[in-house]
Image 1 (cartoon, rainbow, N blue to C red):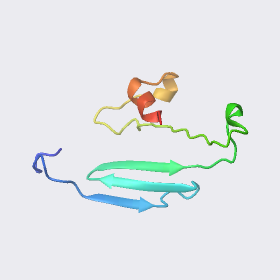
Image 2 (cartoon, rainbow, N blue to C red):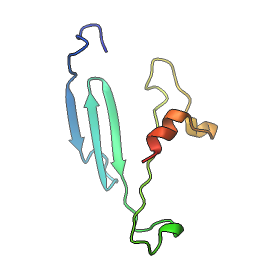
Image 3 (tube, helix red, strand yellow):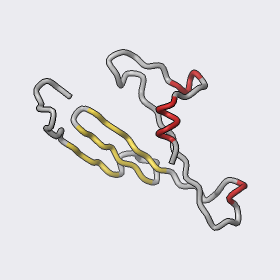
Length: 92
């Protein structure tokens, strides 16, 4: 929240579908100065334990860029261990 906005004032929102050239689906979502890039990939395979079940499988990955905050954040993937927030966001 910036000091020039009231606490209940909405920030401008834009959606830019098909933002990424190579993803089967993508959208750049902008809310004020916050940007979220969502991409989707499709594979015609399922994990071994789902084969012949008639069910699909969905996974998710989440990552915040190192300079997305005022002080540089280290990439969790580089440490080999993800924090609780990342794990929670990846659960579907």
